[in-house]
Image (cartoon, rainbow, N blue to C red; front, side, top):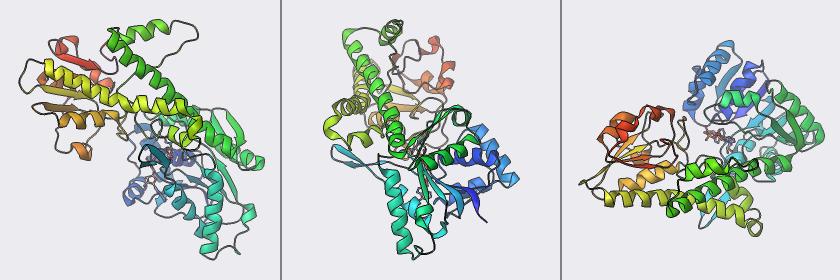
Length: 414
Ligand SMILES: NC(=O)c1ccc[n+]([C@@H]2O[C@H](COP(=O)([O-])OP(=O)(O)OC[C@H]3O[C@@H](n4cnc5c(N)ncnc54)[C@H](O)[C@@H]3O)[C@@H](O)[C@H]2O)c1
């Protein structure tokens, strides 16, 4: 059997993408190297904590349109959605393309003439072109070059913009960029995404599509850095930054974002480095933004240390509200809240109380800590540190906070 689509990488992007294509009538195979992710899909659910996505998976697995396996099988389209982290190397952060390369090479044994490979992973400029070379090299290595007419294989980059917490609705509604290595491929892949995408589809070339995705996240990073820097300046000058931003944003052409404890997640904290590492001398602003945002957790830790020193209680208790990298999700990757809580856990003579309503298991570095309900953590605490603006924290009333030192990194209790 030849599938319509083989999605390689069943993570936060691959799972909803496989589900929505299957729901639109395509025969889809999801592939992951993690056996647990494969068996979860085959049992009709996933690790992605969004109920509409899991309901869709239950439906499409039952209908037979989606199943999962640990190796690719032949398909008209292969969608690669594997991680693209960076390698930490002193003050440089270089893209680690090992997962994309391995996923690309894994297609070679099942590749047939006329098939198309789509890269969805956020990647440095030129990666789609690299995939073409890796696949050709692998076909040579496994002795299949004579079997496949490589000139008929097509490649495209189709970046993803979905917001965790609203993945399914954004997958359908957002505009998309499709960058084929040839205009014909852009047309072909644009038509494929039109099968479920209600947003507009913009066709371009692969390198522009790669740079567009990186640019979107670098732009967000720079804007958040401005807000974070402003919050530190306002703290020094004794000005309420939330009031300040509210007032400045009344200017018709000013739109300042909200500050926070830093920038986390798999995208905004990572992707600007793919531009910086490709054009080091040309990117002082992007580098500075990364440094401001990476420096914000340290500033928050210093604020807590100062609060501890002025707290009259012995062994003060610090309620840390939220661990995930953003509100109302269960994703803790690159989370600044975790960095902050880890540092506080090493404070002498302090007790750390954690409340994170969206996770079941504590991250490894905080294993052994209990997960309190928001109200319980706050009621026991002398210092309340709001790190993530989860909706569950809105049940905490001003009365419950009274008499406690409050450090509100998101302006949540304003
Ligand atoms: N999560 C987001 O909100 C988001 C948004 C836009 C773009 N992206 C980008 O999409 C890509 C994927 O992100 P994600 O959040 O889905 O990652 P993830 O870590 O949640 O999932 C990736 C999956 O790929 C699997 N994998 C790794 N190597 C593999 C291989 N060779 N074969 C098969 N499976 C393999 C992993 O086991 C994992 O399950 C990244 O480049 C990311 O930057 C993510």
